[in-house]
Every structure is written in structure tokens, then in C-alpha cells.
Image (cartoon, rainbow, N blue to C red; front, top):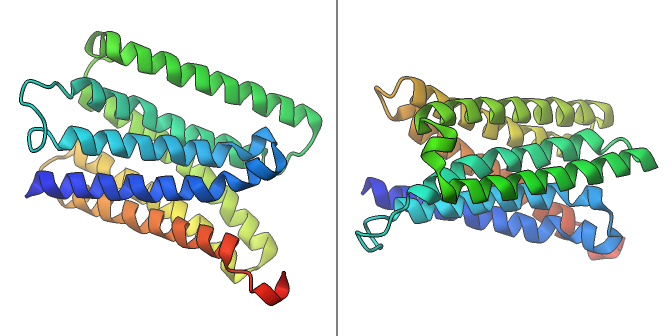
Length: 228
């Protein structure tokens, strides 16, 4: 039952992320500006890691017992911090519309893409020798994820305080939920005596992603036709 729950949870998270990508890619398709690629890339990579995790957890329920999912497990772990890095840099450059800023963002975007591609190749070559212990690396990565989400939460909360719009509070709340989710999973990795932080972290992740889905839907479809 636990494996079935994990497969369903990761699959649901992946589906929500891919729906968010469908919403978030629209500004880039209209403007063709690279700075609008950060959010869809971030949630796209995040969704891909959840899909890989679902595929890994499905073993041995749906897979051949001889099929190894170790590479997929390493891959989703290594790729996930890049998702939060894309989101962080997107918000960092969101208030800096100068030409130099666009150039710097394009350079960072290219560097992140090259880095994630290189690590993906390295994962399939020799993940254990290249990255060491999975549990300890997972702790460091979750710490990095928490730092990224903390910055994004503060950034979006400041924007909310400036606008004083009750509708904008949902964005920092979504990132705060994702941050607490990462913290709960980190606590579970350090302690491990109880699985309450683990399942609590998964539930908080659901809540954050669903909140982002509601925000995206209201942003693109919440304007009454008479106002168009």
C-alpha cells in the first residue's frame, strides 16, 4: 500500500507541474523573451523529477524485477535542485528589465541547462562514485532547495506588501508550503524514527502545487469577458 501511495503521490505532483508549465509557457510564446522561460523550465524540471520518482517507486509493482531504477533515483535527486534554481533566478531578475540583465539571465540560463545536461550524463555513467552517499547528498540538496524557496518566499512576500493586493498573498503562501515540505522531508532524513514528517511533507507539497494551479487558472482564465 505504501508503494502504491508513493506512486500515486509522485504521479499527481508531476501532472500538476506539467499543467502549470502549459500555463506558464504562454508569456514566453507571446513575447519570446528568455526571462519568461525560468518559471516553465523550473516547474517542468520539477514535474520531470516527480515523474521519475513515480517510475522508481513503481518498482517492483509494475516493472521487471531485473530492471534497475537506481539511475532514475539518482537522476531525480540531482535534477530537482535545478528546478528551484531556475525559479530563484527568474524571481531575482524579474524586477531588473535592463539589457544587461537580459544578457546575464541568458548566460545563467544557458549555464544551468549545460550543468543539468552534464549531470544527467554523469548520473548514467557512475552515480555512486561521482556523488557518494545518496542519503547525505539528499540532505544537502534539500538544504539548498529550502534556501531557494526561502528567497522566493521573501521576494514574493515583499511584492505582495508593496501592492497590498489580497490576491497576491497566495503566491508566497504556495512557496512557503513547498519550503516547509522540503524541511519536513529533511527532518525525516535526519531522524527517520517516524514517517510523520515524510507524509506531512508530501501533503504540504500537494497543497503548494494545487495553490499554484489555482493561481495560474485565475491569472489566465479569471478575467471576465466583459473586461476584455
